[in-house]
Length: 159
Image (cartoon, rainbow, N blue to C red; front, side, top):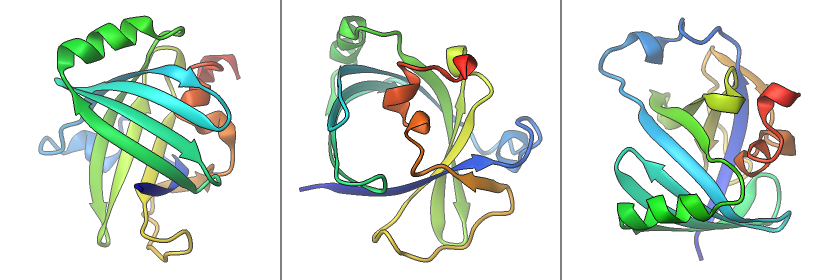
């Protein structure tokens, strides 16, 4: 069984002034994702990352720990599945930033979630130690409003 151990943070700095946005070598992936099934216990997500499709099933154990099964699928299937989602897809740019031996995923949301910037780190254990980058803000791991599966239902622009 695949497990995802993840912590999520807001960003302190103003978007556009961050190192990953000024470095021409750091190119983001463009993501569109929708939810075929979205409940408190399980989500089924379809994602297009640049030109690759993925189908993902997540089942929560805690705010930090979830079962995760992710599979590549043909792009044409992903496009058709996105059209089946009952809500519009989430749109964001994802940057991968290395800091002190860890890879951070920085999601810069657009559309109805414009203005939201979230940093995520995947760990090997819930209590694993890591050095926090200077641009890291408040932890929101335990705040379900910041789950992508909730942002699709309650967009950031409505908060």
